[in-house]
Image (cartoon, rainbow, N blue to C red; front, side, top):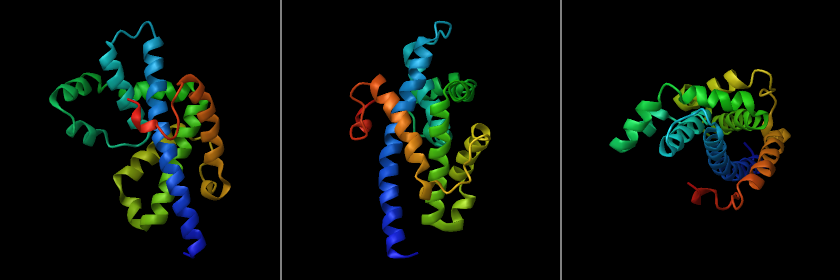
Length: 182
């Protein structure tokens, strides 16, 4: 790999990390708002927060078992009580929010591409890669995730659309301060 390609990939990875931090927070807040606004969904607010966090983590290909193992006993109990509805909550978001679905699918695809570039074929056997690929397969069958999204800058276009919508909904949420929100 040439020096120019290496610099471009490193810049892409830094920008992508910032975008992913924002996406993680905004997606959590989106799902939480969906749960809060659903008058028929009768969980208390703490459980809705846990469900929103688990559902957004699932969609971004995070290891839910590791999250569970790293949680305190109270959080483990909450996660256990919600385990049967985490995927259906995530699916509801993907089926009812086209822009969120696109940004989640393309974020997972770009993450896989960046990891393959930096780690090579060893990443193909990684469980994270499989979780992300499962999300792409399940929710992106009609999207062109085979195109070279690093070269085409397509993810940035989809992300910018999502960012413009969510920054107006979540006043004060920016790329720079996304880690401060909970």
